[in-house]
Length: 292
Ligand SMILES: NC(=O)c1ccc[n+]([C@@H]2O[C@H](COP(=O)([O-])OP(=O)(O)OC[C@H]3O[C@@H](n4cnc5c(N)ncnc54)[C@H](O)[C@@H]3O)[C@@H](O)[C@H]2O)c1
Image (cartoon, rainbow, N blue to C red):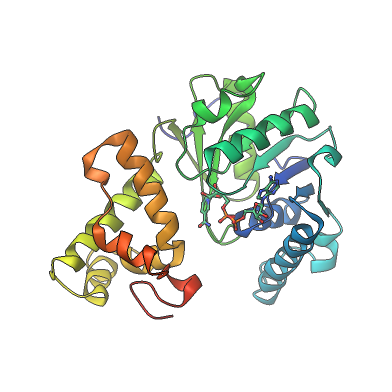
């Protein structure tokens, strides 16, 4: 499947958006929708987590304002955002609700079920999962036809792409609304069929795993492997540096899932397992394939 067909309506911004989970991704998603003019409600798991989420959103908006990338003042955008500590307090009249809690299937399905109970019948429900099956997550819903994957990238405000993942059950009208909203954010959509890792994670993880195997075999050092892809293939960032930014633990979890669902070619290299076991998780711990 490719980008949306000619019947797709033009770019539009939803009036009201909910985001469940105000972490790295949820904060960025709240930022971009509010900056585009939507009212945004972010749900966190506790009052303390809600305070942290609000600080993350403020920091994200502050960074955008410093770089001249915010179309209004930080205060004006923040006024459109509320952060809640209970999913039951979500406004029912939302155009879109995006789930962005950690990548654990059982957590996502329980959150999606609770979300469906809190929203009206016309709200589009999306997951920001980077690899899990949209059909399987949607199986817990009473109306899976309103559900799809809306895969944003990190950092959300600066990333141009949103990968839209359609399950067999996803309604075509829902797809068209989401495509229009992605374009309303000034981002580019690619529409893909639900399959493990979609298009982006499947290719990105494969490249990262092969780079780790090459490092382990002594083909070249990390800097050389990354430079080869950056200058030779014009990738903006080499696969090992990119793994450090994403987090080695996150990459390992996705590779294990792709190994189970797509087969041996995604078997995680021992070097990746060893580094995760030692707590060398990349930039967030100061040590991955590079020292940060
Ligand atoms: N970080 C990335 O680079 C990236 C990129 C694309 C997609 N994703 C996907 O986005 C999702 C979120 O990832 P992240 O990096 O933002 O994680 P994160 O850990 O930074 O944030 C998750 C947030 O969810 C909150 N949360 C946990 N349980 C909750 C609940 N029951 N109700 C409400 N909030 C709850 C946590 O408090 C936390 O703030 C994952 O599915 C991940 O695979 C991540």
